[in-house]
Image 1 (cartoon, rainbow, N blue to C red):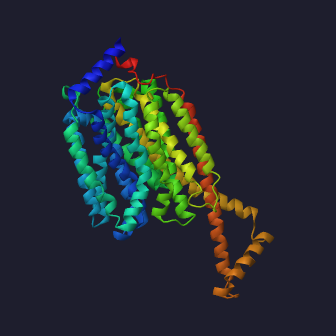
Image 2: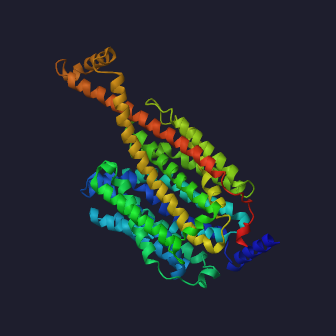
Length: 528
C-alpha cells in the first residue's frame, strides 16, 4: 500500500509539473555531456596549447589540473547552493558561467589567462553532474528511474570516450581553441531548455537553508586541491623523494582528518558523511570510486599506447578507441529496459565481468597490431560499461529519501572524480616505473656481450651503412636497438597496467554483491 501511494505521489508531481520528464532528461543531459566532455577534450590539445602560449608541456598540464581542482571543490557544495539560491537558478548560473569561461579559454592570449578561465570553468562545471542527477532521480517515478539513469550515463560514460576523438579532430582541422568554443552553442541550448522545462520541487522552495559550513568547506578546498596537485606532479617530482611532496601530503592528511571529523560531528555539514552509514550508499560510493579508477585509466592508456608505441596522431588514436563510445550507446537502451526488471547486482556482475575479460584481452597486446585488431574488444568494452554506471546508481540511491538526493549526489560524484584522478595518476606512474623495470630485465637477459645482441647490432649496422657509411654506422645502430628496447619495455608496462585493471574489475564484481537487494522499478522502503 505504501508503495502504491508513493508511486501515485511521484506520478502526480510529474503531471502537476506539466512537463514531459524526457524533456527534463534532455536538458540536464546536455549540461552533463558538455561538462564531462571538457574533462577529456582538452587533453589531446595540450601540446598545441603549450606551443601557442609559449609554455612548456609541464606548464600546460595545469590546464587540466586547475579545472579538476575547481571541479572537485564545488561538487560537494552543490546541494547547499541549490537550497540557498534555488536549484533551477543555480543550475542556470553554473551553465552560463561554464559557457562564458569556455569562450575565455578559447580566446586566451596567455597561459595565466587560460588557467584563470579554466578555474572559473571548473567551478561552473562542478555542480552540473550532481544537480543533473538529482533532478533526473526526482523527475521520474521509481519504475522509470533506470531509464533516466541510462540517459545520464550516456553523458558520463560516452563523453570521456568521444572527447579525445572530437578534440583531436578540432585541433588538427581548425585550432585547439575550438575545443573550447564548441561548448558555446551547447551551453546556450542547455540554458534555453533548463529555463523552459525545469522547475524546483516544493521541498527545495520551502527548505530551510542551513548556515554555510566554513570549516568543512575550507578543509575540503585544502585537501582536494592538494590531492590534485600531488597526483599531477608526483611522478615528475619522484613522489615522496621530494620534500615539498612530503609536506603537501602531511597537509593533505591533516586537512582531510579535520574535514571528516567536522563533517561527521556537525549537525549541518557541507558534506553529510552520515549518508555513508546507509549500507547501499556507502558501498555505492566505494564502487563508483573504484569504477572511476578503472574507466579513466583505460581512457588514458589506450590512446597513449597507440600514440607512443605505434606512432598514431591524436585524432587517429582517438578514432581507434571511439568504438567504445558506440558500444556504450548501443548498451544504453538495453540497460534502460533491464534496469527495471533485473536485480542491479546481476547487471553489475555482467558489466564488470565483461570489462575484466576485455582488459585481460588487451593484456595480449603486441607491437604488430593493426588499427582494427581491437575493434570488437573495444566495442564490447563500451557495451559492458553501460551495465555498470546505471545499476550502481540504482543500488546506491535506492534506499535514500528524495530529500537526501542532492547531498548524496554531490558526495557520489566527488568519489567518482577522485577515483578518476587517482586512476590517471596510477596508470601514468605504473607505465613509467614498469617500463624502467622491464628495460633492466631485458638488459639482464640479453647483455651486450651476448651473441644475439651482437648479431642484431651487426644487422643494424649493415642496414645503416648505406646512409651513414660503414665507419659511422655504429652509433646509429646502437640508437636504433635502444629505441627498440624502449618500445619493448614500454609494451610490457602497458600489458602490466591492463592486467592490473583486470584484477580491479573482478574486485569490483565481488564488492557489488555487498549491496542489499533493491527491487527494480519499485520505491525503496526507506523512502516512506
